[in-house]
Structure formats: structure tokens, C-alpha cells
Length: 290
Image (cartoon, rainbow, N blue to C red; front, side):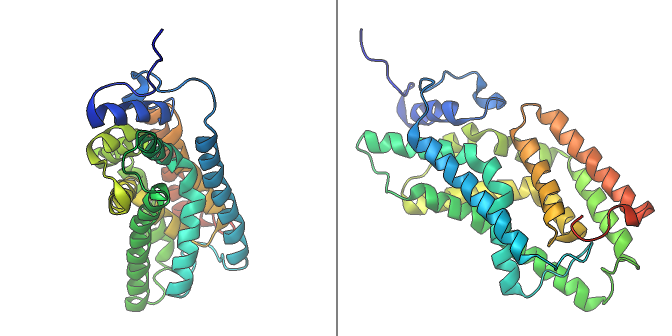
């Protein structure tokens, strides 16, 4: 009996399609109809890669907890100097995003591992460069958000104070995030994040330059999907470990749970409830940590 091929389909798209089908999460509609590309045996390399991502995420939570100790003063917490903020922001991204981006990273690494077995060009470390590109996009977003925050604070001192208009401004930002959950733009970008199939089929590039560009592009889709949730985190307290955990759970849930629509709508409802709580009963969500 001829040996069964690990990858099916013709050409580069066939290789990418089969690789992604095995790496996509079980709830991803874009890959659910494709055959599995490997047996049920656990791939040691992929298991190791998942362990690294989750380990980095766990270490980032510990680091941020130590860094932010005593800094959380409630809503609109001062993010500190730019250098401190950038370091804290990147570590925060690892803590919040690495678990939900793991399926895309595994799919990307699977394709490059296959290319190496076939003797094709796939330089070592490409997966790390891909992840770095992803972080570049989110870091750029964080710097822009920091600049807008600093500009608003400079132009209107006290605007973010909880006992002034800042309370209603925070509620408005969070309600905006709830509304964004229901928009077509959110739906399209969320689908890009949930199913690596389409992205890898049409964006696949090789080499370090290609890995960096793909990482930046995927990060840009993730920013388009989650920018409003991150804006809500600024409003709630960007230096709050408690709110980081809540927003991180929202992001992971809508990207990884099999019930996309339910997860998306549930996050919208939760954000609306938080916004109304801040506007009507500010003490309910204030205070250190939450």
C-alpha cells in the first residue's frame, strides 16, 4: 500500500491548505471541512511551541503584576513615561495575546517545517520573526494610543479624573467598544483572526523579510479586531492587572471559542454593562485592581 502523503492538494496553495487545516482550532469554520493533515499523534515541535507561547504569557503576567504593583489608581491610570509604557505594553501584549494567536503561529510554523523537510527555503527562526512582526503592529497601536492620551491630558488637565468628566468619558469609550463589537468591520477582522486559512493562503511569503511582513499584516488585522477593547482597557485602567485579565479573557473567548456570534455578542453585552455601571454607579467598578 503506498504511503499516505502528509500534505494533500497541488501547488503551494495545496500545501498551505493542508497545513492550516491541521493547525486551525476546532471551531474555525474556514478549516473545518478540510481533512486533517496528520494523525492524532502529538507533534513534539508543535507542543513545544505552544508551551513556549503559554510560558511566555505566564511569565508576562508575573512580570506585569510586579511592574504595576501600587500603580493602579482606578480608571485612566497614568501609564507612566513613554519608555516604561512601551516595555510594559509589549509584555502585556504577550500576556494577553499569545494564547489566542497560538493557532496562527502553529499553522505558520507547520508550513515552514514542511518546506524544510522538502528541501525548500525556510530559514530557521522564521516563526520568531513572524511573532515579532505581530508585536510590531500592536506596539505601534500602543504608542499612538499613548500619544493621544498624553495630548488629551496636556490640552485638558483633569479630563481623566474620576470625579469630573473623566467618569463619563470612560463610560463613553467602553460603550463605543460595545457598539464596535456589532459592526461589519469587527466581524470581518474577527474572522481573519479566527481562521488562519484565508490569511495564509493569500499572504504566504518566505524568508525573514516575508515572515516579518506577514507578522505585521496579521497583527494589523488583530488591531482592527481588538483596538476598541484595548481602548476600553485604557479607560478602565491600563495598569490594572484585574482589568487586563478581563479584557484578555474577552479577546481569547471571541477568537477561540467555537460559538463566534455568541462570544462576540456576549462581549458586547458585558462591555455595555460595565459602561453603564461606571456612568450610573461609579463605585461599583472603581478601586485598585478592578
